[in-house]
Every structure is written in structure tokens, then in C-alpha cells.
Image (cartoon, rainbow, N blue to C red; front, side, top):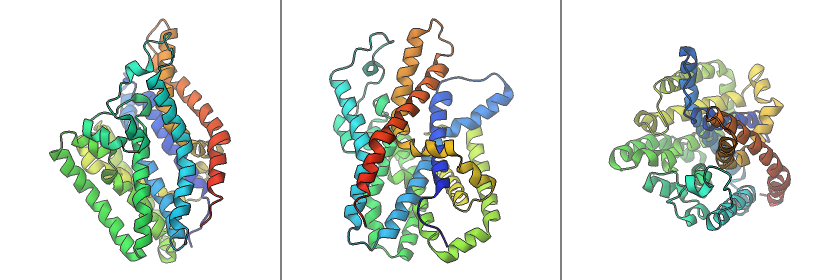
Length: 376
């Protein structure tokens, strides 16, 4: 039967997710184009590494769904869930938002750089949207990421909106009805994206950042959490692992096809059906990680990969502003423009990881332990 408790392979999978996001914003979002035919082909495939956030959604659905399913009969179900989430998410996020508010109010003197942060990252988004986790609605309405330092927070808003709805649904529905609802949402989400794409001015952008439009990945994760807690399904999954590998391989072929066409995050084929394909592929990866053994399990349990997964939250939240600041710093210090994007981005990643390690040790882990004092 499915084992409970911490699953080391999922830390490794989370490490892969954040690695993909970092890779995209370091290399594939820098404008560089290789000359070699072979490298160009690899570059096209790597260009879809922005989908690391889709892997995060599937993982989040699985982990949060599992917590809710295991505690659904607890008398302290809602209280404990939201207190634990608050201690995990809000301290670091609140610190980042506070620093951003202070920066916008009284910009720091970065006169040595080629422009201040406030100059290259103007925001049309209301400040209150970051406080209320509604920035993704404003982004969809205006068709903009807003401020560069805060752009990545759209996915955090999606997660928070998921946290508001999932506990109530899991608590109210029987497991059979929950399964039907989850499958229905997985089917309805791409239909909603198609409707928005063709009927709304910023439909493609809205498809990318709105929680209902990305609910298929989240719900596939919850569906996995529900199914693996059924002994019959779990044993079937173990027995049919070879078939799971084949299906996941076919889905990977479809993902490669999308990448080869150079479809970006908001391209028509991507927002309509591409997100669903990515969600299904990463669901296959999740199930393979859960049932993994041998080389797959050893790779996912590599200590550096697991450690990276452990600091993924802070890394994701800070990597864009830190990388951008480092690129501007390297550009200001260098007499040559070539290579500044590459070197500045690499320096930004190193600095981000260092900050994330400190954040985990002195802020996130103590807050996490404090939150776990509240029991179900």
C-alpha cells in the first residue's frame, strides 16, 4: 500500500522543477541564439523549461491534496491547515513584499547601475494586489507582468487561491464524488482556456496566470493523492509501471513537439491544449517518482537535487529580481556588452541560492517548525 510521510524522491522532483525555471530565466529568456544546427535543436527543446512551474502545480496538488485527505476527519482540519500554510508561506512572502513597498516608496541609490530597479520595472498593478494575492487577476486584466521583481508571484497567487478552495471541497465530498469532480475540472480547464483565448482581449495571458485556467495541473495532483491512497490502485500502479513509463514517454514526445515549434507560454496551441499535455506529462513523472526504484530513484534522491528542492520556495520568489540586478551590475562593470546576460544571470543564480539557504536556516525552517506545533 502507498507509504505516507516524507517522500525523498519528491524533493528531487521539486529540485528539477526549480532547476527548469532557473534555466529558462538564465539562458532561454536572455535572447541568445546558437549558430550550430544541433545546438539550435537542443535550444528549442530547452526553451520549454518555463514549464517547471507546471511541475510545481502538479506537485503542490499532490502534496496539499494528500495532507487534506489524511486529515479530512479532524476536528481541527481548517484551523491547523491554514495556520501551517500561513507559517510556511507568509513570513518570507511578507518580507519580500515589505521590501518591495519600501523600495517603491523610497528607491535605493543604485546610481552606479544602468538605471534603477524602479526604472526598468514599472508596475501598473496596484500594490494591494500583492498583499491580497490577487496580482494574477490584475495581470490578466492588464495583460502585463507588472513589476519585474514581483512577476513570479503570479503562481504563488494561484497556489493561495487553490488553498482557499481545496480544503472545503475535500472536506465536503465523499472520495467517489471528489474523484468525479477532479476529473471534470481536468476536462473543463482547457475548455475554459479556449473560451478565454477567443473571447477576451488578453485571453492568452489570462489563460497562463488565472487559477481556474491552471486547475487541471493542480487537480491532477490531488487526483493522484486520492488514487494512491487506494490499495487496489496502488498495487495496479506498481504492476503496470512499465505501461506508465511508455505512456509518460509518449506524452514527453508531445512536449518535445510543442518545444520544437517554439511555442511560448502564451501561444495559442500552448494555452488551449498544451498546458493539459504538460500537466499530464508531469503527472506521469510524479507517479514514476512515487513508484521509482533503481536508477530513477537514485537520481531523484541525489543530495544536491534534494537540497535544491528544499530551498525552492525562496529561490523561486527571489531569482528574478536578483538575476536582473546582477545582470545590470555586470553590465555596468564591464566594457563589453557580450556575455553580460550570461555572466550576470549565473551570478544571480549563485547569489539567489546563497540567500535561499540562509532563508531556510534562519527564517523558513523555524517558522515551519512553529507551524507544525498545531496538530490535526
